[in-house]
Image 1 (cartoon, rainbow, N blue to C red):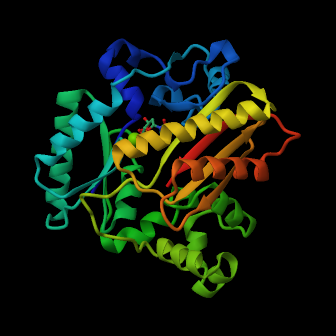
Image 2 (image 1 turned 90 degrees about the horizontal axis):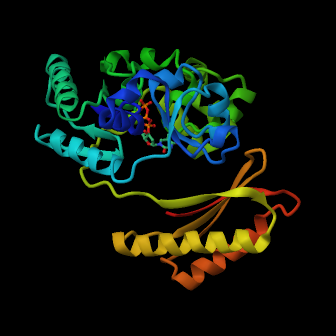
Length: 335
Ligand code: TTP
Ligand code: MG
């Protein structure tokens, strides 16, 4: 089972202040009447009807729907709400693997489909009663299918996919609906006329290997055939910690860019120490005017110390910064 909370940050805000439900609601950066910077974190379903979605520039969201309510986010609302919901979920005594602030896998392999459906309804009811938040649930023969299923009928959906239906179920979906197929892979696929999972399903493994390399080819082949992991681990570690900063003006001030990256790296370093987070890769992200985004990274054999991290950031910046372009956002990630 995969459980995903609907429009999570927006739902938290609506639960806090039900009057917000009446209108489109966008959580993210301050739109500053169309001059704002930064991006949308999420939007309620009313706002999505206007085409607003996560990671869209806030100005674009403002232009699509200027009369929406815009909220910059409420401190200490989302984390604690998430914690309460997943703690409540644990009372059903199944193994749970939380994978993000608003989603988790639950190992219900010993249940029948009917039992799974009843459990899903019960969970939805509980969360609605205690938090006034709706959730969508997907049930499938493995994690990938369950995750796709939870996204299939949002909000407040329950979608059950049986093992023998899985390949058919994903066939008509756009390839981006498959977890792990990101914008770059999708772009490459489009160039080869692969738009839907059914297009991918038609390709023999040999051809996929030729197009994407052996490792990626096999991975894609499995995805297309609806094969994925069934292991729900209850102590999955986080993979990375990242922080980013949108400048209030696009800048080509090298020093400012460098200092900001250093400050972000220092913050993550301290955060990692507190969380005892182990990492061996340091990456920077540079987003230029026009939303063109590049990342660069360096891997280490062992966990680097702060001096090595800062030196790496300097090197990555020197090597990758396109000096003729102005920078809109910088980010750092340890993983
Ligand atoms: P999602 O589950 O991806 O989205 P959602 O819960 O808002 O909407 P859906 O109903 O489609 O599940 O992400 C969970 C939360 O994480 C989301 O409410 C806000 C935050 N988030 C961001 O801040 N930025 C992002 O780009 C994304 C995708 C999510
Ligand atoms: Mg969600």
